[in-house]
Amino acid sequence: MKLPSFRLRIALLSAALAGSTLVGFGAVSWFQIYNAKISRLDAELLNHLMRATPNFPPRDEPPVGAASPKRESSRDRSRWQFYEDSLSYAFGTNTKTPVALVVLDTNNNILYQSNSLPADLEVNRLLLKRLQLTPLPPPPKREPPPLPSNTNPSTQRPPLIRPRPPQFVTQQTVTAVWRIGATKFPNAQIAIAVSLQAVDQEMATIRNIFLVSIPGALLLVAVGAWLVSGGALRPIRQLTGVIQQVTVKGLDQRIPIGTTDVEFVELIQVFNLMLSRLERSFTQASRFSGDAAHELKTPLTILQGELERTLQQVDPGSEVQQRLSNLLDEVRRLSGIMRKLLLLSLADAGKMSLYLVDVDMSELLMEMLEDVEMLAPHLTVQTDFIDGLRVKGDRDLLIQVLQNLFSNAIKYNLTNGWIQIRAHRTPITLHVTIVNASKDIPLSERERIFDRFYRGDPSRNRKVEGIGLGLSLAREIARAHRGDLTLDLTPSGQTAFTLTLPMK
Image 1: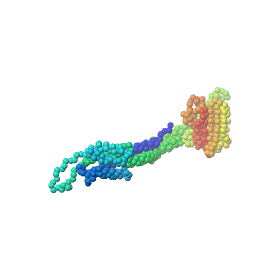
Image 2: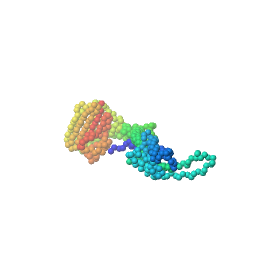
Image 3: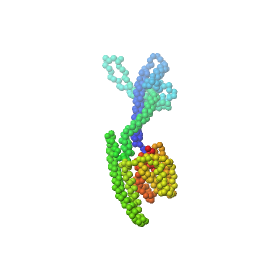
Image 4: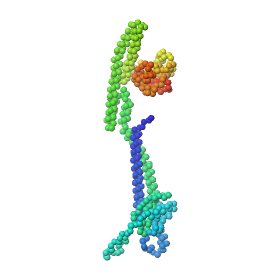
């Protein structure tokens, strides 16, 4: 299961936060702009409603001239038609805006009604309905007291009766949305409807701008958050890089604090202190194993010499000779363990000295093959390598590696099993693979098989001698040669180790 990325989560959360902010800001801005346009349209509509007053003839006055009522009606209609045409270009747009106009007299008789919109005649019914809901203008105020006698009557103005302020509403028909305003004058009633098509087009343009700019802004925010979070997490990456280099040879590494953010200072200080403690612990452990190996080497050598001398002095075939032989075998086993511990301590300290010579690996493999045929004649051995596979290395240490691999292949083999020896070279490396028939190694043991003193499942290894240092030492020797020793993935019922060595 792939773990989520903290850096990616920061970038996505930042983009989500910025996105919600931008969407909210865009929605509020869109509604504010829309309301501002509607308010401006209402102001213009109110202005045109008020300007419609001069088109009404004075109340209780006969028409001017000798024209008949029918002729006067025709002239009024022309006047209202001209007024309606002027309204189409008077609402702040460069194109003709659909407008509907209805004019009634005080008896609710239609003086003028738009007929230029045959596809949307429903708007006239909306205007008539709106006029029915519009209240009458307030009654005129009481007449002021008579003026003084020296006042010129011609300068006296008639009382001004203002209509009630119109209330504007938005209503929809089958084909359009209209902004409607209506008012009543003392001598007539008028209602105007203006199509919101131009406003809707402008708002659609603004909406499209938001729909394009907001994702672009979110992308920039996400990229910026990714870069910023990468810079903020740089100390963590630096810490991870140092942790990856922490081996027995890399415990002297420390992370500098001078250029680190204050939030990471404590973490890096704790990590540096941990490295210091680990370095001291490994140094003490390595020194102890090396010192113990040195100190035990001399007593074991003396004990081995005394046992060999005593063994020569006792009667052959006696019980004492048998006991001395068993003791000598154990002493030699302890000497081998001490030698391995000494080599491991040198490897931990990076002081494993190599006596580099030309080593014929084909010849060494043939020698190991002879040992296998002598020690395990019941096993079938297959080989696949050519002569002349030569490398630069320490012959004695490489022999120890091969002896360990072949010893394991014999000890952990199945009854009437088999061993395969394969070797091939590339321009820069030599690969030696030892494969044997065996029980399957559990995954948990595969991960720890090179650990020191680890011998795996006791039920599987109870009849096998050893203390679990051979593979660990073999890998250290391979790495000292700038190579490696690995446990390969194999089919069920097989175990394979591959020794990799540089050709130069």
